[in-house]
Length: 533
Image (cartoon, rainbow, N blue to C red; front, side, top):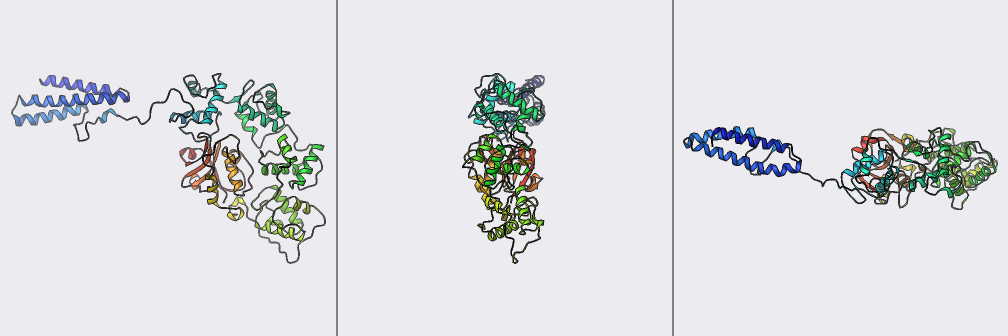
């Protein structure tokens, strides 16, 4: 073979190598092996042709030099023990099967995390850390998306659904006239609670004209854009503390209010005499009642709240160690007026000093000295003939430490961080259900509420947005300072730190309560954490 032909042949090899570089990954692997064999054969051929024209010694040296130069030009490394290598081809081996044409319940693939993230972004799914598993919650969200886009509601992401979902101009969630589904039923139930739907039989799961009228009135009263649809803005307001109801509220006077006040007074929630007017004391009593009876805390006498107040199942009030609210301030003011508590301790936090003062009052006034402020205790505190403290009673002037400065410690609550993690862990695997507060199913805020309730912490039910500023615990502003037992709040989601960089939460993306590492998603979406113990 002449030198000219040798060079032409090797240039051909080089062209083949460059062609392979432009191929997709699967073809690279196949073609790379073939061209490697050809390249080596060419190198050997060039070396042997040189030997026939010169003596053995000089030909070997020249051939080695020529081979090294030509091999470098072809970007092919000589054979090693591990076989041929092609570093210039940038070959990578696929570790996952290609994305299935149909994404449906039960499928597991990395692309599903993108799907979940998009559904959350558009408001069809509660915010959470995306996963690669397509579960029941994801399917339900896909069905609502398909409904909104006029597609067959099969919960399967295929060629028709995927392009619409990933389109930059994809529609955000908005329930409207004619829609049918569980999400519509939840909306109607909340409109009924707030007095915008007149009766329970209007909760049908179909977004009819009466539902549209109710949504319009809610938007009007709450100064939102009036379109009669329940989009992200209206949906967020439905469960906000700022919502204005269309029912019995502050300032109203009626026999209905009087009847409710009488019952709240009997149960120990109302600390002033019933007068038929819905004033600040009544609103506070309603909020406290809602908190202790697993209702949404909004301070309004909606149908469900009235029904529970008047029922035999209504839980009586009993302020206890660790509570912190305006009713505790009211209790402390009454104890101070009776001479059992120094006014410096009227902080709104039910600590050991308040408990001691309450026990002395109960003991001196013929009540069971259990340190709980229930209906009988408040009734006695509101009478004129109470007995004051004896001379041996000493009022302390040392202010009580509350939950905000973090000094209350475990002494203010039953249990410990270890018990809290144990209780939370006992529900791992329980299904995620929107709006559920236990004991066998949860959403993210319902799970935190249930765990704290088992620990004896007097925390009312609040949504993930409400956890941005509950106003009673030690604030943790740095993600790196999170410790076991802290309530971790991220954008649209909340969980319980389990220690060791792990989190326990009710996950919509996984459809269950799970324990996992706090990934970069938690860090990137972090808002605040709250230390209970």
